[in-house]
Length: 416
Image 1 (tube, rainbow, N blue to C red):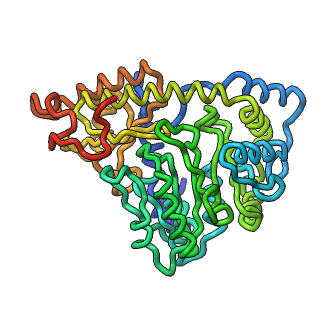
Image 2 (image 1 turned 135 degrees about the horizontal axis):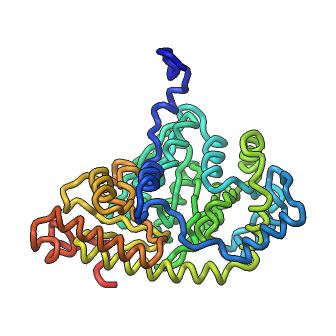
Image 3 (image 1 turned 90 degrees about the horizontal axis):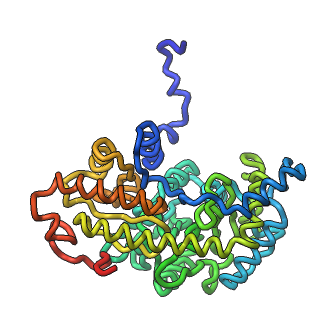
């Protein structure tokens, strides 16, 4: 028994002040209910391809159950370097410029703790993935939000960056294709932002975990742009493109000074990613391209399906150009993001993530992952349509497919 003693006074107030993940909260609620369709957690519904699983199992049969070096298997780092060179024409030395991490999440934490000191500021696009701001705070620095909107395609612009930079600004986080909006960023936009990064002496932490999941246009790797290789900490991994979420393998690529310090933190906290998962990642890079391409094609079909469903339900939705998330505007219902997500789960047993889990700029939206099966997406849309109709006056929702104002906002999907 703990009695009446105030144990919380022993806890770091920085940690107490950080909210729990809104994504996991709704996932946990959904897991306690029966017959729930989850469009909440960003996890592929595909099983990791057999040849990748087989490589893991064969490694176990051969007795590969030991630690690897802190940097990760050299064989894997060589494959990562080759892939980055072939895909983006950016060159890294696998010996000292690539670090294998326990997923991209660890990579984000390592990069921020390597760069930041108390008093520093980090620019973060909003809405943004839930871990960025808390990790900045835990590193003793302050997040500064760059508020994007549907009107500009949820893209950060050089103008936003220029207005937000102060003498305290140390770094900027970019995540395109974006979680939660599905937005991508235009190359000319990136070039202007990178010019500002150089002029203001900023480091860019570029989370490119969804780079292979791009449906419109081509992905631009930040590190491949002029003058940005050594100024960028490039983060990527295997969870999304190769359906390897539970394997927890990611990587960081950057100049040797940054990677050396990231490794130092990594060796005291995680030591190394699991060896069997690293061996599986080698197989994914060597022979997984066709399987990845097939998955991306199926995500593309599901993307069109979910956009059509939101249109029929009268929920305006920005057309996602990458990742596997849709970010519909639910303000026509008069509900907040939290109210919509909670009531939808209770009444229709469909789990989505409230937009405000990704920051204030996400209020009025929900995030729906279309990484679920076609059958689940179809049924979830049917239930959601019924839910919305109950909350909108008769006729309005059917005759105004672009929402309460009956106007087509720039960036919203019109024709599929």
